[in-house]
Length: 199
Image 1: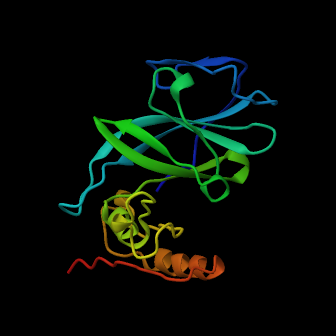
Image 2: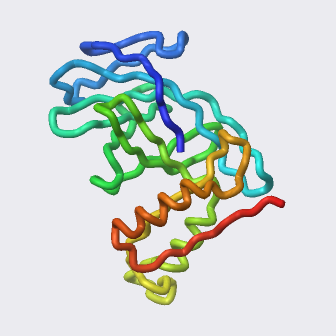
């Protein structure tokens, strides 16, 4: 999960320039922003890794956050033209995700926005293990039921208790406890968890 804990807060009208000293971005006119204020920042993500306990740091990406009059929105920008960029809001509200194209790799992600747009959390999986488990449990193919999982169409909640920025893939017990408590809060029926111990 990536967090922008510091960033630029600017008031813009239609466009801004020099986010990374080499590019110019034009805000699409269809983006609703009554205040005209935008939260800007840069964040590096990490390449998913299953072969070892280190993860390659990817290039920085532009992050834009604003309030559209009803909810906070975020754009994680990897396109030169913002018209092609995906706009997301809190995943728990919209259940929407996006796909980042970085270094010839596609990476799914979702976001959570906090603190009046001053904190953007970017969540990405760091391996395909969660996807494999989700498919076994809840895959749903209406036209090919033989390919269904054990509980076709069940809602999956994915939580990660490790972070590559620490350089340590051992389980974070504080994060693990929070994940279990969140499951209880959300009245999750079944929990499947995998723990990695590095001796």
